[in-house]
Structure formats: C-alpha cells, structure tokens
Length: 276
Length: 278
Image (cartoon, rainbow over all chains, first blue to last red; front, side):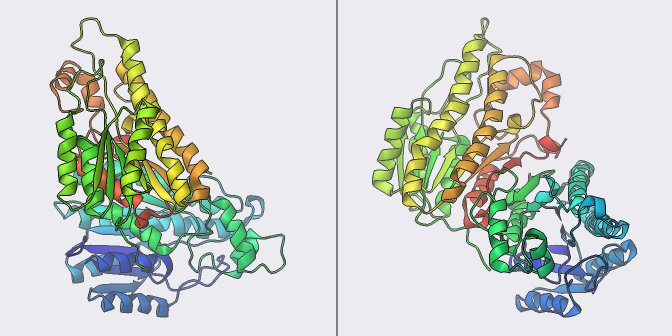
C-alpha cells in the first residue's frame, strides 16, 4: 500500500533531473502522473535542456511501476498550452490531487552585464512559468473535498542572494511570495501550498561545462574535481550536492498525509547552505 | 535511488517522553525500529497550573515502546539539572549504545490567570530554564557520544509557532518567557547546525501550532481563552482545524531524523496548519 494510492500528480519539468525523480517517487507511492516538459532549448540557457527522448524515458519508468502517465510537450511560458495539458491529463486520469511546479532553467551573468533577453527568459520560465502551471490546476484541486497539495520548487537562491544570479534569485524569491499568497487563498479548500529550497542538486542543470566555468572562473577549463571543492564550500554539511531523490523525499513528506497540516512554509533541502 | 525511513539499530534520546508529544515521538520512532532513552521530570513545577506528567505516564510510554518489541530505558530527570540529565543519558548509553537521535522536546507553558498573586518573574525564569536552558543541556548531554560514534546523527529541537511569531502576547511572565525561549531555541539550532555539520550531525527545529496534549487541553487554558477572546482569535490557525495531533509532529520528526532528510539541516520546520503563514 502506497502513501498516494488513488492520487494524481501534475509535474512540470518532468523529462529528467528532479522532475523525473519526483514522478518516479510519487508513482512508487501509488500516484498516477501528468507530466509536462518543454523538451526544447531556451535561447539564453548555456547548457542543453531536456529532449523528447528524455520525456519518453520518464514515461517508460512510470509505466514500469505499473502506474499511468499522460505526458505532453508543453512550454510553461505558454499558459494556454499548459492548461490544455493539465485538462487533458485530468480528463484521462480522472482527478488531480498534487501539483509539483518544478520546471526551471539556469544561466549566469553579473547583473550589470545581463541582457534583457536573459532576464526575461528567466522570469518567464522560473517565475511566471510556475504561476502558469499552478493556476489551471487550482479548479481541479478544488473539486476534491479532501483538498490537495501544491509544491513549487524554489532554491536556496529563494532565501539568500547569489552573485551572477540576479534573475534566478529574483524569480526564486518571487516563488516564496506566490506560495505565501496561494497558501492563504487556498487554505479554506484544504489545499496546502509550500516551496522547497534545494542547494545544488546532482542533475544536468549543474553538471555541465558552462556551470563549472561559472563556479571556477579562475580556471580555464575546470573539471568535476575542481568544481566539487567549490560546491562543498557552499554547504554546511561536507557534501558538494544533494541527489534528486533527497528533494523528492521532502516533496513526498509535504504532499502525503504526513504533511497534512503543513502549509505556507519554505522547506530547505540544502545541506545547511542557508544557515552557513 | 531509494532512501529509507528505517531507524533499526538507532538509539533515540527523548526528553519530556512521559506523555503528549514526547510519548508520541517515542512510539513513532520505535515503529521505525529505534530504541529509546526516555527522560521526564514526572513532577510538578510551581508556576505551571496544569498537572504535569507522572511516573505512571512514563511507565505507560515504556509499555507502548516495548509492545513494539523495541528496548527503552526510562529515567526521571530534570532537564534543568545537567548532572542528573547526564547520568540518565549515560545509563541509557550503557544499556542501548551510543545516541544517534536527540529530541529535545520537554517543555512547559506557565499559566497564571487563576492565581490571585501571580509571580510573573518566577514564571519567566521557570519557562526559560526548562524550554531553553533545558534544550542546551539535552544536546550537550548527548552530543559527545554522537561525535565519538562517528556515524553522524540527527537532532530535533521542539520550538513552537511562538518561536517564529509573538501573536497572542499578553505581557505575562509565562507568555514572555515562552516566546523568548522558543525563539531562543531557533538560535541554538542554527549555531548547533554550524557546529555539528563537520560531524554530519544535522540539527533542525519543529514549530507546532497548538497540539492536542494536556499542556493546552486543560481547564486553566480553556478559562484563559474564554476570558480573552482577542488572544484566542489571534491564535487561530489558517487551516480550518483547532489543533493538530501529536502524531503530526512525530511524522515531521520521523522524516527529519531518517535518511529521507539526510541532507536537511539548519531548518525551522513549521507544522502549524498555516499559523505562521497568516
């Protein structure tokens, strides 16, 4: 018996990385999944984003758990497309209980040199994209008498400032504001709304050469070893990063019965980065 | 990658374990496989109006843990008395092995409204002594054995919504001291999280709203709330529930101390039905 038997979860950015891990963890506990991912590049992002093959891999992993999944290529910047994906998913799977708004991108620049395009891509994806994913889900969640749970993925950059990430930091702080208001507005419907704040997570978003170069600007072509030291120095616990599974377990606590009275909170999964 | 909630082979040191949240934590962690060192004062403190736990309560906790086929060492000890507390922990370690998990849960809520001559200064001192100094003693009594063992560990300090807000303040010694101590616990958590990260010992706080235990479900508290509707309203939750259950706090703690939260440290975790989000 799973903690989420009979539930349906909608997850953005589900093609790989944290999103895929969340889908697998929730499915293992019995949930069916509505998955969206853009599966395409965004202009100012310096590393490769997910592909249709990645999303197909997520589908395969969920089906291997004998759960159902409705997967759609949709861009969270396109509200109509996301709404269509959610509505289609609910039509096929019958209900909606959980939303994990996870889709996000990363790019780097000092604020003074940041292009408008880089700023706009970031805010459109990491802040407006979360809103556009959550909003069309609300009527479906309200249809459940027992309520539901929304988790939006923020970051340690949603709780503190990080250089060369003015756009990312602004978007991730913006999520905290969005969560606080949604928690107030949806409490009467027993819909709980929280954010998670990971430190570096071992995914393609950080395991790439442009990200290594950002964290070790002193080196010409930094490798994993060099960047690992820098990552360790950012955390209080002596580790460079957490695994996607660590964030998934925090989300599982929040969306399952264990967290039935937890709402409006910011939950770091950050190896102590924020208090260091 | 699959992480486990299993606590088999772990030893958890829990204060205030005779009843209420403390007993619930002992049982919840024992369900996951942990053995327990359970400490409680089992006696009254002068400024506390409601009846505090008894030796029979502590025996009941032992019975419930043993019914789960886990081992438990119980001791009556005062968290304000480091010598007594250290002796209790040492006895537990001698029987069960080094400590892996610490739950600093013991706490009081002085309420003086029915006292014609309330001693606010004494109430303030009592609640700070138990709810803040007692937390420091609890951590320091156990941490050396955790560091020696070298296997990391997890510490959870029980704060309160009163550790994050001052809502419902009334200027009484008990309320002043309760809010000050519960805020102080957050400071302890942050400094301990930094101190102990090198040993992979994680330190977090939980912040419950009202929990259905004898500490808040008693005649004195009911009379106070009826007489002070403004404060009663200020203490309402965002979600449409009056109180949460002890098991809700235990579930948060079971997550925090397990491998599921192996990289969670320095976090103030509300379990408060949205109280602090209002």
